[in-house]
Image (cartoon, one colour):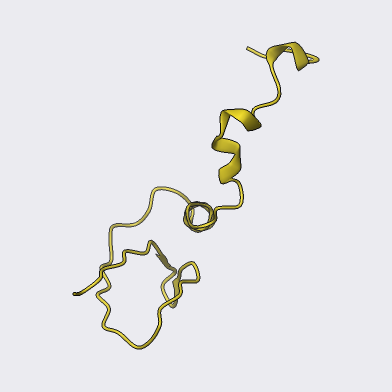
Length: 77
């Protein structure tokens, strides 16, 4: 059975910048160049890296949301 993996990356004109991935051995790849990103190259790469990092996944849990509006010193609207 063939497995497919899609990875977002940025081509800076010379090199392809992408997050580190774990591939067990040599394999075929298909590279597709898309239109120029609307974000800056650094912002795009940062977004890619954040999506691939699970460091802050625990913050998605409501149990980790320990602050309320009562904790605010000043409220901005």
